[in-house]
Length: 224
Length: 224
DNA sequence: GACGGAATCAGCCATGTGGCTGATTCCTTC
DNA sequence: GAAGGAATCAGCCACATGGCTGATTCCGTC
Image (tube, each protein chain N blue to C red):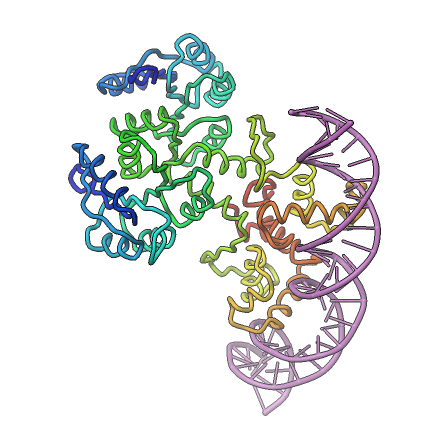
């Protein structure tokens, strides 16, 4: 954004992708594709030469993948913002990319408008994320606030546990106290205590924390 | 986005703000301001009437604040995306807004271009966040994913666990008692208690069970 | 109808836990 | 050398937790 035109570098090992995005972006009056790279190593070099405003970065690339390339580019301190391109929405790499310092990411099947808007947004210093990713980040963050969340869990009896006990175990694994469970299940706290005690005995555990761990390890509840 | 024009509702108790944004946005050929609201309650009603694509939502408003209004609008079903407007970057409300289901937020001093781009982005289903917020979300997320930090995150404050604290958190998530951790780490139990307390405070959790749950959810430890 | 399991509830009690205050020793940074 | 963060430790206190005993009600099964 040296003057008003956003200078973009496209890094992708597939020629078709580079060409396609290049045409789409050059059609925009305020965006100019200044260079391309076919792998991460080349991307890092090109950024050094061309000092683009935005780098469209594919993740899967030979030589140096998009994650590492992003890390180097961001660390290099240039004003260059990295917009990561992914094929899959829930790609595990997305988090790595964000941690590496990417300003956001877009799906490869984004429309011309979405692509252009995305480039403009990260160029302006904002971050662009798919809602699913944001939701997940927020979910994690929400846990910090200690707000216990409820989710409809199919009743599946585990081993020796009765349905009710399994139900209680799930609630334990969501961090609820005995009082909170009593309220949730509409029973007395003493009843909950009985269930908890029986769960511990049956599973051979010592305390509710171990019960929570057990629930996760047994896939009774799953992260995410 | 029923046809191609993005229909926007502006909710802000200050007339000047409403007018300003309205003029800026209506200047865009693809954006149309279809209504205004002076408080949260009215915003919810207007959304029901007008079914806008995007709601520009101020946080501080009489009657019903932006957070609650956002919650109602998002819960209402609606295809309406909420773009929250804030005055301060690190506004605590930002997180509440995101948890309430907002698609993103913008600073009130955003340029016309940023504003328009932001509206288009959230209308297209993406999320828009200021880098500082994203960084913080990612910091939380990655700190707890065990990946060593390499970005200079001068800011501490809310959720930065120290190495030792992270170590203790992992042990908690393995079901160890304070006494057991003390033995394992070769320190006094009182020291362990201090670490545990600080972890709970920093993460905003109540007890060790929630800490264990958090560790799993944050992928600090994984099942199997 | 008897039997047993499941769910419900109430006490009592020892203690692990978490909050709070205050302190010391290393470090690194300014 | 001052300042501040991190790790260490101690004591006190309120309370949730977990173990134990004993009880009632509602089921389905034999």
